[in-house]
Image (cartoon, rainbow, N blue to C red):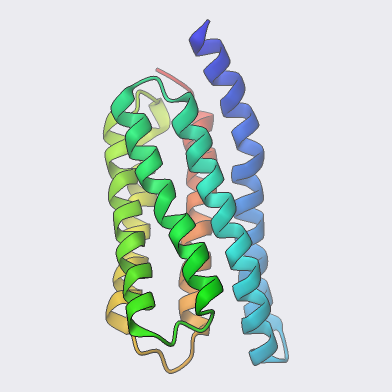
Length: 180
């Protein structure tokens, strides 16, 4: 009974994961093909704030349907830094303050590590995809942490969008893998 409810929730979560991937792809296209870089960057940051909220929602929904307690904790730990990222990007959209940029980098590192822990704890056949997602998030955290101060913020926005794109795609692949 619990497995059937979990599978039904997995399919509902696919909608949000697909929206996350499509939205991150739109940020990439927007950054690459817009003739006005400053306005594009501001619009991409605002769009990224919404996508970070969706990423937190996807991970919180996954925590709710996880069968093991340790997996639920890992998913919750992975979602909280994305909520922190939303607050940071609202407070300082261009990441001009060192403390906020480093907090964003540290939070993303924690989220990536938590997603790797969730991959260890999952019983999905597609759980191996979560390792890639966690490693990608940790790589983005390293780019942000060691790249500050930024000459331009557009590459950082592109790195965050890439992280969300990978998260969306890999979440779809993981959910499509089903339970073992």
